[in-house]
Image 1 (cartoon, rainbow, N blue to C red):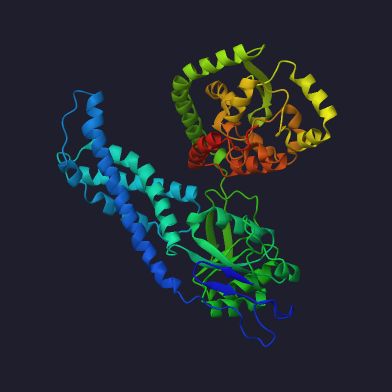
Image 2: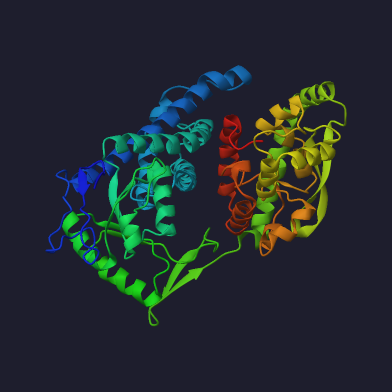
Length: 516
C-alpha cells in the first residue's frame, strides 16, 4: 500500500497484527523516507511569506495613492493635490508591518484562513495606529498624507490576508509550505481532523499516515473526501520508532478517548522526538473563542480560562451598534431593489407581499418575523396533500423540515427568491427594531422549542438573518447539526466571527448551495 505525500512515497506493508502494518515480522521498518529534505524547503517559506506581506502593504499604499490622487478629487473638488513624494515618505510602513507580524509569530502559525485573517486584521490595524503615532511624534505631518494612511490601512485589510492566502497556495504547489504530519488516532476525531486539513489547504499540514491500536482501523484506514485512503502506519507503541525513522517531526494526537494518564504519558514520550506536537483534548462543545491557557507551577496543572463573550455588556453594545449601523446603511441601498421584488411577487400570485410568522427570539420571547412571501396562500393544504401521497417526501420533511427536490407550495418568483435567499431581505427591519441581528442563530419556530432540548443557550442571542448554519451547508444540514452550530456560535461569539460569516454568506448565496 502506498500513499503519495507530495514529498515522496510512504510505503507500508500489511504485516502481522501483532507488529502492526508499519513493521515486518522481523521488526524491520517498511516506511521509506522521502529523498527530498522537506525541512530545508520549509526554511524558504518564512522569508517568502515576509516578501509577500511587504509587497501587499506596499501595494496597499500605492492603491491608496491612486484613490487619493485621482478618484477622491473627482468627488471632492476642494482637496489639495498630492504627489508620489507622500508614497516614498511611507517606505518604512511595510517594514514596520512585517515586524509586527514576526512579533506575533504570524509566519509560523498554521491556522484556518478566516482565523488567520482575523489576526492579520488586528495586527495590521495596530501597525497603522503605531504609524500614525510615529508620524505625530516625529512631526512628519507635512510630509505625510493622513488620508493616504487611512486609505492604505483600509486596503491592507483586504490585500494582506488575500495575498497571504494566495501565496500559501502557490507555495503548497511547490511543496514549500507543505508539511507532512502523522495523526495519532484514526477514530472519528482523527477523521474530522483529516477532513479539516483537506478542506483548509492554507494550513499546510499534509497527513502521511495514522497510528492506532485498533486492528479494524489498521485494515480499513480513513479516507479523504475524494476517496483516497491514508494508511495506518502502526500502533501507539510504535510512535517513537515511526517518528524517528520517518524523519517526520510534526505529530497531532487526536485520541480524546485515551485515559488521561495514558494520554499524558504518550504526549511526554513524543515531546522529545517532535518539533511540533498538537494535542486535541476531549473538550468538544466547550467555548474556545478567547480562551486563555494558564498553568500552576507548584501543582503542575493546566488551567483554561473560558469567557462568555455575549454575557459581557461591552461586547453586547459593540454587536448592537454594529448591527444598527450596517443595517441602516444596507437598508438605504436595498429598499429600491426590495420594491421591485414586491412588484414581482404581487404580479406572480395572489396574496400578501410580506409573510409574517412568529419566531423565538432572545430569552425565548416571541416576535413577528418578516419575509417575502414565496408560497401560495393555501400552502398548508398543498403540503399535507403532497406528503400524504409521497412517502419519500414525508421522510425528507421529517429529517430536514424542508423539501429539497420539489416543493409544490413555492411560487415561480418564490423559487428564485429562495435560491438567492432574497426572501429574507425584509428581516433587516427586524434588525432595526432590535428583534434580530445580522448574524446569529437560526430564528426557530415555537413548535421547534421542544426539539432544542439542552440547547437553550441558543436563546441567549438574537436570531440572525444569516449565521454559522447558513455558511456551513444551509438546508443540507440536519436539524440537530443546526442546533449544534448555533450553540457553538453563541458560546464563541466575536465581532470578527460576525464579519467573516457575513463575507462568507455572500459567496454561499451566489453559489445557491443548500437553498430550497
